[in-house]
Image (tube, rainbow, N blue to C red; front, side):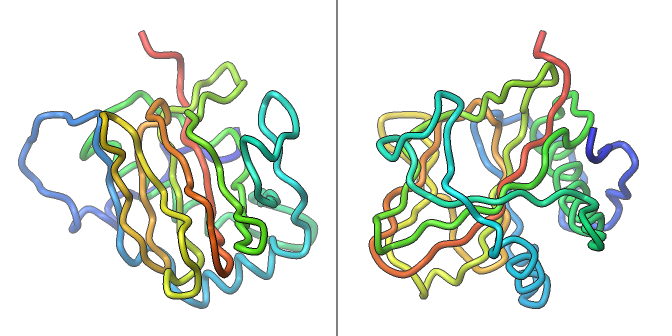
Length: 207
């Protein structure tokens, strides 16, 4: 396990949550409008941009399914301590899970995925679910926007739970959380560059 969610301090975000009980809505999403600051975003880009490579899917490399470049961010790498970012994400995920889903989640078993969609090649990711390959199953997916929406066109994150796909909110530094089983896609970026950070919270198989 890269980062144990049970060790984080969820009190940081507790003021953003309603205290009263509410019915679970397992087909909805949770978002934090200003999750990352501009200096934090700049730091992430500096860490990850120079080591990007062509993204693949579990079935191999195919631009028909996914056209983007990615790199990975670990809690510790070379002389960099990225644990602050993992802890910040874990705090948010823990709060969102307690508020909306109440899944049995242990933590992050995978590195953070830095993703670049380039408008010069209509970068996209077709509809998919985040099933993963590990014994501990992905249960929550988190997408954090690292580009201002004014700097690119297209690139909508859509969740598909009915006949009408729902566009997730956009915003620089915004984090969106949804169940990993939810069908979702990134529509083609037709102009500019869309950068994002993606990670998954995992736990034991559903029973």
